[in-house]
Length: 334
Image (cartoon, rainbow, N blue to C red; front, side, top):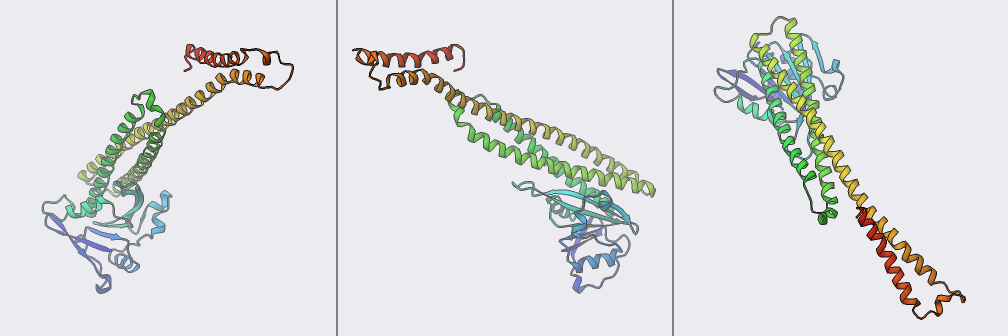
């Protein structure tokens, strides 16, 4: 789908373009700040290429991870590909590449997913007194601001969820309830893994945004066209990205700690169960030995004719079973 946004006084106006019914004429310079390609067809790619004078990268080219394939200049246009996080509010967030093609005052965005910041921004710029988006560069920076704000909100939610998980892991439990915690720990591990995946994706997205901003700043400085306001916005975005990257590192460290702590508590619980079985086995060894001795069927056994042999054997078995428990209790092993 191709949407073209034209400037109209203090806001932008969206136009859905039917490339099959529209002549492919170049847009007048400066009249169209933003062209948005969502899941573009080959016809839409060719239309934009003819209109703007750039080559639209394919989906396979956008997914390449080499820096030289993501950040480059061609025919006077900047090609900048970043990674965005989509479906943040679901249990299955995903990473998707987004390419910004900036030529003159026109921006072309190429994407194969619809992150919420794009939808919200597209609605916002069409209202009166919208944010300053008169040029493609301003549109790109505003989109990145929206993406950064979205990641910041996601990291805040992850932080709150991790704090709740931490309280759940380390809360005091009555000893009678500890045996039922294994199932809870399994769910906690799943929750920790899910939050860890989201933080990892957010960090990857932030790193890619930082590379895009750094590259754009370098190109703008070389061409001597960076306005003071633009430089200030870029520096502000870079500071936000840096602080969020540090925060994501902190969250990753805390997630790893909680994962290790949860696995450690599971091991402690399993060791406690094994210890109980070990103590029971040791405590029952003497009675078993006595029962084995007096269970033999030899004729020459003096105790077989003893009148009180049976209660004596039972008593010995009970005493030898109790003594290990008393010993273990005194040593604090029970």
